[in-house]
Image (cartoon, rainbow, N blue to C red; front, side, top):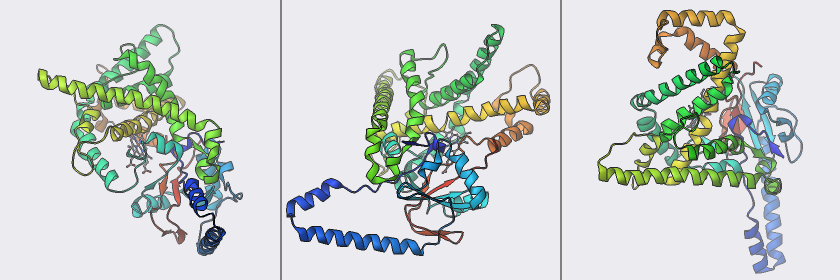
Length: 434
Ligand code: HEM
């Protein structure tokens, strides 16, 4: 059973699986009933301690849960909708159980602020699940790395090297090129009397924008460079985001971990991860080889995110970031930075079509600020307050990530008068308007 395929990009099963091979080894070696008894008594005492300790916890209310699986069966494929409906009954801070894990759900701005800002560092752990572990190269990415020196190192690279105004400005020509190509392809479809599939076009432009920034490559459109890789890439990105964010019952109930294997989920994940790894490694090798050639020919080449990442030191300040770290960051950006953008734009167009008076007002603003002789550019954006308001309203009405990344408590803590133990999962759910 897969739990909530797209589950707002993440849901967490922190796995505290018992290492069976260690237990078997211990019993096999001693063959002693005393050892077994000591083990059982210790285990019972531990369970008793755990139960009595939990009884003392003041936990928020939430929907009734079943033994063993908790509330997993209620989440479905649109977990955010279920959580939002339940939050209306139980209030802005609500508690559920996912197998052996506790999950606290924040559903008001004030409560979300407490978890994400006031107690940011306490709730800065990240989930562990089969998909998350596999597709993040065991938490070497930004989204999945828990708070600590490695995550801080990556964040520093992001703020000092990747997402600087200068760097983002350097990608303006490819962004403008992508935008112009999309407009041209819409006009071509219209001229030929074809139906314009805007969702597809926005998806392609979002993906091309990210891959040009990451790898200086485009994989969609007629003149996409590296066509031999384009098909492989397209095939990969259609499977990867869903699989990377899929959670199984076995992720939440340690002794049902075998479900992930028997259901075939793990092998599907492994196949896609292997394909992703081969393709991403190919990109890195080309860059490594080109660097050598460039040194010889004194040739200057375009600096993309991967070039920048390859030049960064490892966390301890020596050598370079590992290939796995770079591949994990690439996957992060592909998963986090494409659908979020294209879905927001698709909703914006849909809402403008449904509200012609807003479309008219927006058109009037564009005519006044940009005029009718040229296409709007990024430098116009600060002078277009109505456009900014439209986009903010779209993000409020249709947040592309209605559940944020799952956070995990790194230590025992109290929020709003309730107690949460280390390891408790936390998500914030946005108000659902549709
Ligand atoms: C409309 C566009 C977008 C929205 C609504 C959005 C929303 C979010 C949200 C809600 C989070 C989770 C924050 C948290 O709970 O800690 C997040 C994290 C993240 N996003 Fe985005 N995002 C968007 C675009 C992008 C783009 C274009 C990129 C990359 C180029 C990106 C990369 C990331 C990364 C790397 C993280 C993890 C940050 C961390 O853990 O420190 N996102 N985003």
